[in-house]
Image (cartoon, rainbow, N blue to C red):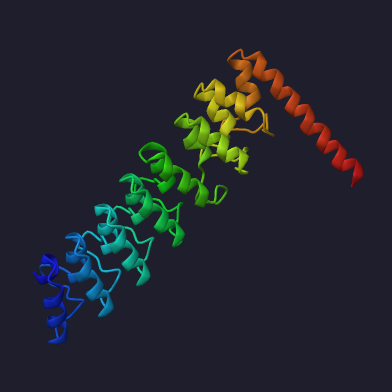
Length: 258
């Protein structure tokens, strides 16, 4: 009761009288209750007295989740300074970073990323914070996630969703910052093949400015060059054949010098 109502002096007195700062019985963990009610002074007292900064509710939501959801950057900072885990997920795998991006809390998003929150962590729906930033986040949140993303890491594949969502500026940023242009998704599709199938002509033209592989095969053998021919895009086919010739010349030159 005292934790939820913000009576920090009473909370301190109760602790001095032997009350546990990590009580897990109803109505819940004191730190979770204080964070839920945005009681900064009580949160400060509890943390100073040894409260578990990763305390959870029954749905596995942590105090950090709650502070992020409420947009209370001061409590977020307090929890982080006491070792709160930035990557603990709730029962849907949602991390504090997922929540911060979804709620468009840019200051908190930055705080979490600076403390090492993983951009590539996926929730139970398979979404990363970067995925959420592209669909629901603010431009600032998206920029922050892009800056901290390991764009060629095993758990991070931002080019394909950026193409699917027709995010030209994001695709351009990823390419300029070294995203693997020939990396395949789970169906064996490269970003170029994906853009062609999605009929995003402007993205196809953008990708063709880079070192795309015209013969990269999907699971069924479809390649960008084959697709260009099938859909009667001779302009693309011509550029892709030039890419193929360039690849062959480069390969021949390497073999000649070895």
